[in-house]
Amino acid sequence: MSLVKRTDNWLPSIFDDMFKTDWLGGTSNVNNIGVSIPAVNIKESEDNFLVEVAAPGKTKEDFNIELDNDVLTISSEEKKENTQEEKGKFTRREFSYSTFKRAFSLPETVESAKISASYENGVLLINLPKREEAKVQTKRMIEIA
Image 1 (spheres, rainbow, N blue to C red):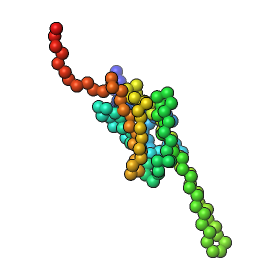
Image 2 (image 1 turned 45 degrees about the horizontal axis):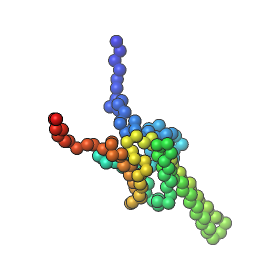
Image 3 (image 1 turned 90 degrees about the vertical axis):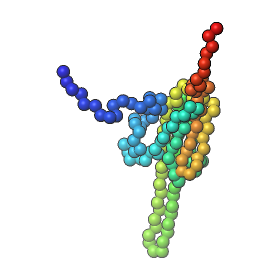
Image 4 (image 1 turned 135 degrees about the vertical axis):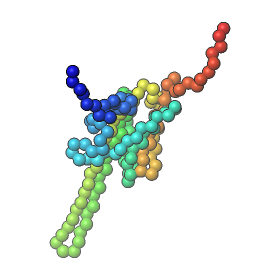
């Protein structure tokens, strides 16, 4: 008989099962080439799931949100260029390019036609309403005939 040591994280989260990332392979905020990926929170209530993407310094025009075969994809691409010329022989030109892409498989309980999004105070909010039949039903008494 052998003993197997388990860590506290051996049981996957229910959200990891429902909202799987594609190429990140987990919840890390940095992929293998050092590109920063925004952190994502997913909250569940009786009526919906709320996806919060931390992306300060962007505008709502910087985001693309796609839904294809129950896969929700959030992406952004930003290019910046700054040229600075000074007296003398030196010229400096700096540019940056940032991009990210996150994809989540949606559970069958989401009403995909009613998905909405907004961007407030550096956080992209995506509302994923649940179908009526997936919502928690209130307790009621059943009369015996």
